[in-house]
Image (cartoon, rainbow, N blue to C red; front, top):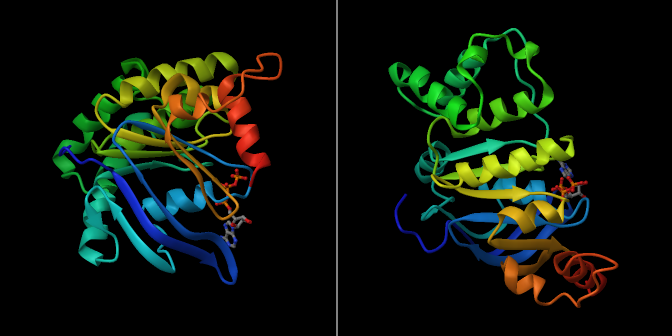
Length: 251
Ligand SMILES: Nc1ncnc2c1ncn2[C@@H]1O[C@H](COP(=O)(O)OP(=O)(O)OP(=O)(O)O)[C@@H](O)[C@H]1O
């Protein structure tokens, strides 16, 4: 990845579904690394991720992803090849073999067909799927293993930026801890933006935080800086949780 100072930058961006405004003149930028995206239900996290993935275009404003402005069609095409997405809910085809599932995902992201299987093998090993599972059908996998295959699909084409929408929802505590270790591994080769409702996910993995609420960005900055704003009250929650509660209370 080139040495970009920000992987995502938005200036005065507004997004509406029909007449329903979700984001109103939002400006912020995200540096390389792992970024957590927090906000109450319905605040617009998934919408923001879909604008970053170029799936949805804003009504107004400037969006620059990986150094390219999304209003240009050719730029959008290039950006999509450099991004991997794990949606909030995703379905894998049950009868397809694990290796073919990931190879196909790599191919749909523009990798040459001859390279897809090798890329899929590498991605699967990187997410901790053992070789003996490669030729199993997806339907034979556990929920946690499917989650890993989903992440392998998002990273097989070696993207510079991976977008994860609530990746730990539905995982048990052990699965969440394993996921966090995996995320730290994945982030050695790509930047990651992850929406979550679990502040502990942010605490253990992210360096940067964006909080959205009230149709705007309520905080954008370092996780440590945000935590230091939280009044110490360990009986009620961690400094990050307290800072988040205070921020939402002020919106
Ligand atoms: N396709 C759509 N058409 C119309 N409105 C939508 C659509 N998708 C989302 N919305 C609305 O936009 C707002 C933001 O939704 P979004 O899913 O982005 O929020 P979120 O922060 O990801 O929520 P959650 O934490 O519950 O997943 C909500 O009010 C939602 O009802």
